Image (cartoon, rainbow, N blue to C red; front, top):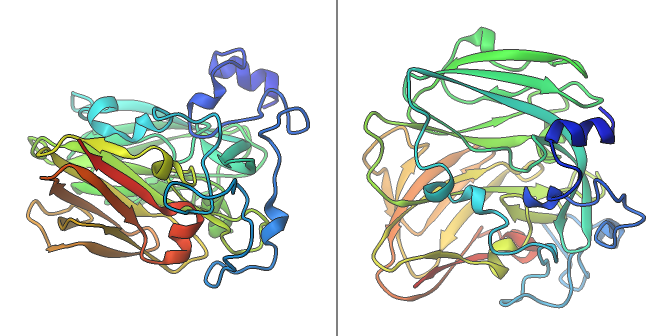
Length: 345
């Protein structure tokens, strides 16, 4: 699919392309767009597990509000990732015993931090892919189209017919219909499963899938937070880290919640090249529902540790006004874009 055909498929003449998750430069090209300059060579040779704090990272323009070395894109605003605020954008799963949706593979440049562009592989032009939500037992029919020059697929975690598992490559220009019965309840990732798997996922081919229990969960303000890294030099090491695709976003634009209102976070670790990550919330403890497959908490804590593709649902209520920091307790990840705030107002 060329650029002209892609824009016609989107139904827009190039306007509003940045309204997804960091899309930049698709119409103007890297040479003409001042945002579309990569500076990944500045971290060449640095490993994610032992970063040099003196390195001026891509996206660094001199210290965030707390000191993170990576800033979000200059064109981003507080509504840029509003699609991950589930209480406002996806209040509930579709009604009826079955529903249809589609997923399109688009390979395109994305701005993932200030002055930092990657050649991303995306579901529908955004990273992470769209939130898919269903009720337990609903029949999902997903039309998958590969508008790229590489084979791709979509694999859902959870329970389903192995003939619909999504590990088989779908050729460029081809399509496939996946039929999945939603289950079990909880929070499950989906991602491309074409080898080399780490390469396809680390370029952006992942998203979140929620299966609600009968009657739903108790009312709460819901947000999805998917942690991943960006390998700017294709060296097999992550250079920056991001919640929901954009490094430093929740440092500049905190998640705002009312005091006394229950908050529910769907948290997933979709990093490649790092064997483990964590989520820590300052000044507050929370109930943990591992994978969300139970309706009673597994534990109550202030930090959870997640292997690759592991996920959890956490719930808490902030009773005092103030700023509550969150980040992985792998501090190099926090320093390189994965630190954020929840503000109780």
